[in-house]
Length: 166
Image (tube, rainbow, N blue to C red; front, side):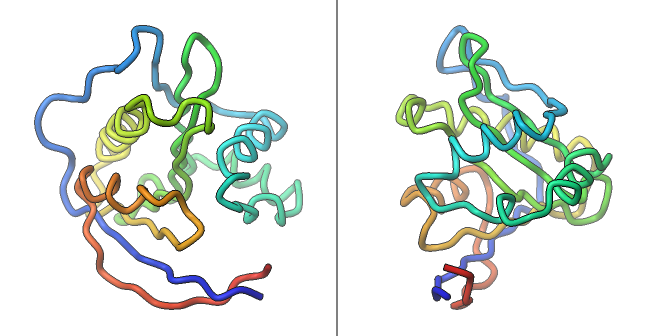
């Protein structure tokens, strides 16, 4: 077991202003329905460096159910057709939508693609008119995660140490 500092953040209004322009001419964000294999490949490519394992510990049938749910929305960033990152929301259509996963494949980091992906995905989530979007991040996540979320409009509402499987 490992203790991590978990920071909970929420966004209470949609992004303001014009949508972020694509930083690369061949970068697009679109909602996709990923099959189990494609999802797990992208999940591991993005989450491996920051020790994501939640979806890897799930039974395949359980994960397939989550992925097939109408309330699960996955927005994939593609650069020249290659999956470069994703934003996953749960509980879409409810008052509180959770941003469950967000990140880029390491090879695509540092190119301003993260804020672009997050902005496009957040605008899509807000189109469902929730009361709030929320997320949690922890000490294993990318060091810039909280500042990226803050610039996107999220604010901290709680922090606590939690114990997770090692």
